[in-house]
Structure formats: structure tokens, C-alpha cells
Image (cartoon, rainbow, N blue to C red; front, side):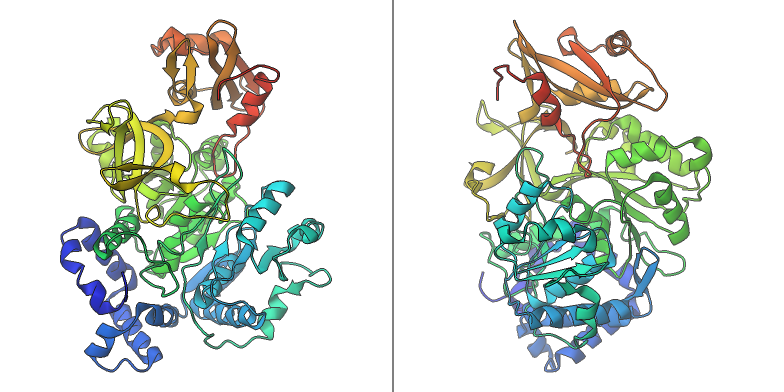
Length: 614
């Protein structure tokens, strides 16, 4: 696409001006920044940049040069506003800026250069964001390492991206010391939150001896998460080219036209508008205040902290999710925006009534749920609970997406208020291009017909699995000359463009030649008032090959038997072939912290020593 000056971007404006997402996103920025602050940010950016003196200078100026100064100007304007509240520590934007600049210079002083990777292995904390901003300023992607990984998985995840530096919490230091000889790319280990072992660096000491001056900037958007790894080793996903192309001269050029790239950029970030960016304003600080209960390394949680990154919001990361502390923080910090996974909502609703009723939750505006299926009953119960505790509106919202696609569909309160049947959907396609493909006919499916869910989005147009041996081409289908990402999901769109997911292709159970999707059975079982969680998986059968099995976790203090489950499903008119042949009850089901069920772990014990499909 060549030069990325303001002039080149301006040429694409007529194409984008008529989109609701464009006007909505502009209104969101204006609402959150405020008119006077917007002017101050722009003036401060010009002043920092120095040689922007005329409109012609601005029109020809490269965005990769201007964006670092814009970011720091925004922090200056919001100087006394709280940026991060973490573990009892409260940092203003001015204080955060000081620490980010010091870390930027410290990392450059260690020899890190643009495109070198600086990985993190951190609990949710202020240092995560400081590292993210510092790496962005100096052009270093920051791989988000999952601290729940086993030793071998962690070694593989690190070596795939070959970072030169690793910022890690002190609690992980002993384990990493034992692995150092197997991590040849890492030259510098930087310890947060405790004493640094020999030959490792102390984070705070590193900041203290580094200047709070502007580093040699080479801006890149340092977002570099991994996939969830539910079906194999987590793959590192390159966001810094796709999301960052508009703002960085280091990013690779996407293989689409400038107009199409900008359309996808606006579609993707329009979730800020759809989820209430033009409506939310804390009565005291006038901004969005984000609670961050899920791990920051999880790609889905990014939707929970973008308002802090882009809009002058306040971020409140929780080191770990605890249901009552979640409610306490909403009240204490006047939280109005949060990303959760369904299991978090289930644990909150399972609290004793006297605990749940202690907290005023009237500040809440937007509860964003994703990463795993949420039943209509859970969505409705969430709304009822928050209304009970002071909210004047329904707060539940949802999106469908993945690490590769980012946000695609969005479910809003007005959607299901208009048509309650939409509770069963994951929203309307609003942030990407998503269609349903019929492999048998080789054509796009009409409304109501199930098929493969395929997506083109901001992140898929430049998708790259960094350091992975997997062939990326296998994840795409070329249709009418365009590449569409296949996430392995099946579903359909209705006449209004709302997406209903049937299930995941890899989890499909083929019983005597009949395709059965676990999601339908799981949703039905979860409707039983005594059930907390359930996984439906493949179970060996001598005649039919495989049949559904249900492994169920009950709510505390409850008891049920197999016949109770069967009677419950028959009452819901589930066909006999879908009723599980095997039912068992367990104390807890294996889930990733992002809410995804680890079904392989359950299935493997059923199929030990048995020849199986797939």
C-alpha cells in the first residue's frame, strides 16, 4: 500500500463515511475524550512533534512518527486521572507515563531493537500494561505467555517466538531458572514483585536507574497473544501487523487495498461503540472504568481493557478472579465495563444470596461475555441479578470471535429485548465479514441453514502463526477469489444477520451415521436447576461407533441420578438418539481459565484402549 501519510488515508474516507460503525466510533472517542481534551491532545501532539507547522506538513506526515507523540500527549492531558488500580496501588496517567518511559529506555539499554520480542509471564498487574506500552514505543512485540501452561508447553511457546527478554513475576522465577538452558534466545530475565535470583534483573531497580525521557521510538502495537490451545499447542498470533498497520511504519503491509483495510479496522474497533462507548461516563472521573478479572494473556480479555488503552479509561486488574471480590470492586471502584467468561457469571450467581445482596452494582453498564457458550438462561439470570442490585437496564452483552478473528458478532441488550429468541444467538455480525458456507454444494448458505462459519476480519487478513510449524493455508478457504478463515465452527445466520452456533466440527458425535452436536445437549442439561456445569463428549459403543456421554458437575449440596437427567431431557423433547447413553457426576470439570472446556481430557479416559474416530 506504500506510504501511510494522512493524505493517503484521507483518500479512503468517502468509502467509509456512510458506515454506522464509522460515525459511532468517532462519537465514542469524542464522548470519552471530551471536546476540550481532544483539542489539547491534538495541540500537544503537534507541540511534541515539533516540525508540524502547517496543514501541508500534517497532510504529508507519516503516522508511524506521529502516533507515539499522540499517545504521550493523551497521557499528559489525562495526567491526574487514575490509569491503573492494581493490588492496592493507584497510578495516575502521569505516573504511568513516567514508568513507561523509564522501562522503554531500560529495554533499549539492554540492547533490544525494533522487531525483537520481549515476552511477559505475569499475573494481572500494572507492570503488564507498563511493559505493553514500553514495548509498543520501541517497536518490540510482546508475546502474552500463559502462566497456566505445563513446563513442556511453556518451553515450546517461548521457543516458538524466540524473545530476547522475558518479564516475569517472581513466583515463576524458580520454575524458569530450571528451564534456562532450554530457552536459548532469552538474554535478559526481568523480575517483578519479588527478589531477583542471581543473574536476573529487578524490575523496579531497572526503572530507577533509567531516564523518564522519550526513547528512540519505532512504534508498533505490541499485542501478541496466543490461541487457547484447546486442540493442541497454543499458537502465537500476530496482531501487531494487522491492528498496528495504520499506526506503525514497522508493520507489514496487509494483502488488501487500503480502503478494505480501513473498513476492517473500523469494523473491528466499533465494538467500543456497540458496547456503549457513547453512553458510559463515570459521574466523577467522566470515563469508562474497566474491571479486568480474567487473565491478561487471554486474547478475549483485550475487549475488556481497550477502553483503558485508547479512551482514557481506568483499568482495574484482578490478580485472580474471586466472585465476591469481583462484586466488591464493582461497588468500590464504580466499574461500568467488564469482560467475563460464562463460568465467572455462574460462580457469581452461585454465591449465597446474603453475599450477593451486599453490593451496590448500579454503576455497571456493560458486561461483555465471550470465549465459551453461555446459555439463554445464564444471560437472563445475569440481567436479573444486576437489576436486583441497582442497575436500571439490562447489562448482558456478548460477542463471538477467536484469537484469529478477534470480534465478529455482537449481541446487545436491545437485540434480545426486541426479540427474546436472540438470547440463543451470539449476536449480529457487526465487526467483521462472517458468512455460512455449505461444503456439499460449494455455495453460501441461505438464512436458517447450518454450515461452516467463515470470517474475514482485520486480524485474519494478515494472520500469521509466529514460529509455528502448522501450515496456515489449511485454516483458510478460498471462495470467489477471497480467503476466508475457518474456525471449525458450524452454525447459521437468521434473516436479520444474527449468528446461531450449532457446535464445533471437531466435537461432533456421529452416532450410527447421525451427526450430533454436544452444544445442544449441554444447553438442555444446563437448564436443570441443580446443574452447575456439563460436558458432553464421545463415548464408545459396540454397534453405533460412538454415542453421547454427559459428565456433570452439580451445584453445591445437590444430588441427581442418571434417570433424573434422562427424564429432564425427555421433558424438553430431546430426541432419543441425543440422550446420553452414559451419565456420570464429578466434583469439578476441567476448564481453561478462559472458560473453554478441556474435553480431550474427559474423552481420553473413555477411549483408552479403544479404536476411535478422529
